[in-house]
Image 1 (tube, rainbow, N blue to C red):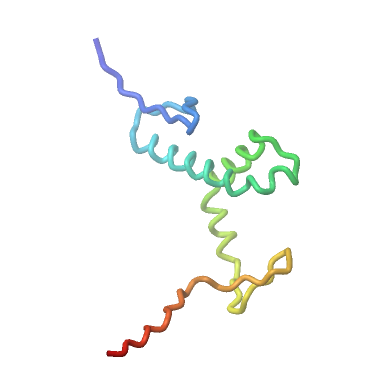
Image 2: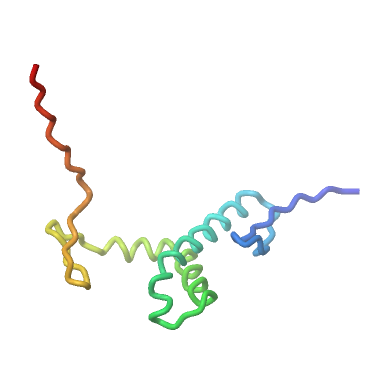
Length: 109
């Protein structure tokens, strides 16, 4: 008799995606699947406008997650302006990277 240990990667719904004999490989694959699920949430707002179903959105998300090095390289090219940014709807967004510290209230005794 022998014992075989397998690592099974499942999605958030519990569907089996892939089996591995090596834990590090399963962990690496799982991290990509988790990233794909997070990316699909980012794409949800454009899903209806592009007439895409859930499977199509997930396929795009999974592709981007598996191409993470290339995606990171592409995103590094984005230059962020130092002044407020104008959005599509015409509203101006402020740079929220620096938190404003409110002035200390004056205390009188």
